[in-house]
Image 1 (tube, rainbow, N blue to C red):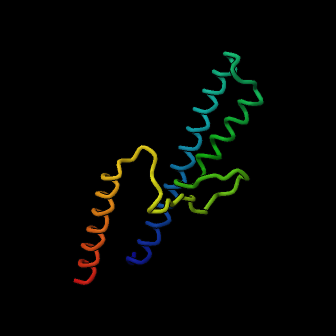
Image 2: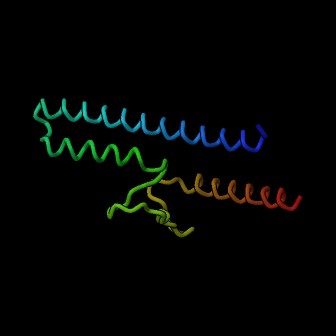
Image 3: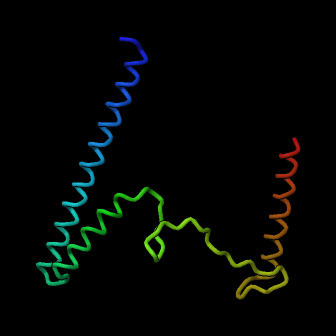
Length: 120
C-alpha cells in the first residue's frame, strides 16, 4: 500500500476516533448533569422542567468551542471589552502621586528599551 493511501486512511481513522471520543464525553456530561439535576429535584431545589433545561444547557455549553463567550441574545460575542482610559492629569482615588509618577517613568523607560530592541 502506498504512503499516500496510508496517510489518508490514518487521517480518516483519527477523525473517526476523535468523533467517537467527543460523543462519549458528551454522553458522560449529559449523564452527570442528569444525575445532578435528579438530586436537586429529589431535594426540592429544582422542578423537573428546570432540571430538563439545566441538562440541555449543560450539553449545549459542552458543545460550544473552548473560549466562546455567550452574549445576552444567545449568539457568540466577538466584540472587545470596553476599557476606561483616564487622563494623565486626572487624580486616581487612593493613589500615591509619587508612586504614580514612578510607574509612569518606568513605563517610559520600558518603551524606550522596546524601541531600541525593535531597531536592532
